[in-house]
Length: 259
Image 1: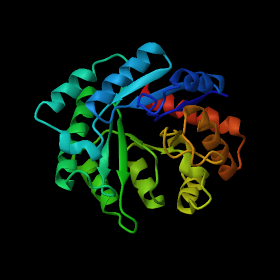
Image 2: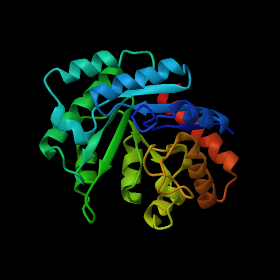
Image 3: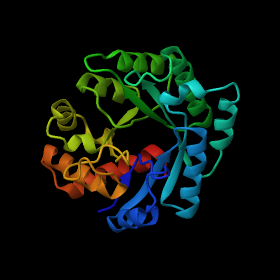
Image 4: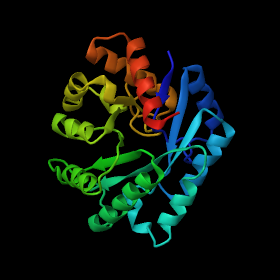
């Protein structure tokens, strides 16, 4: 029952036992994993994983919206050059983050537009992050507006946490919805409604490790092997065998990233 973790930060410094973590993922039949860059430094460490585990790890090149303030006149050219690497399957992690607000919103907009243009130039999907303060939809609204204005060509809404209306608009714009550990949380009622409603042909799975660990390990460090618990929860919500969830989401991820 092969699965794909479409978003894991296993290249970051939280994994002194990285070899063991990878072995557990492979033993759990996690056949491919995508490690997105969030800084230029992490883009390079993503390559290192892909070289250590060819055909298992793949890379994405981007600057996280919390790091948008680090963008310089040369960053676009650097990302363009890095994205030529044969393991690169996407541009990102990029997007908008109004929750932490570590970068001014106008700078986040400029940097997101640049990522969209790079993805179109390189003909690669986008990996998008969006987060807002409780009770606000401004980041979600701005994200959709910018995608439309730049005529984005699709990708994935990483760690999907929006409502059904946002899900439907994302799908209309050519984006997959990535469900992660939050799906297993009992209080994620809105997300459960989305997962029960949308066409599964637009759904992929992820961990966002080391964060957002699914139940029953919530509160501990996340790792790619735990994507199975997300698949189990989605199967429960859809009243389908988990093998069918694995078949559909794995095929979707292969189509999204053109493995």
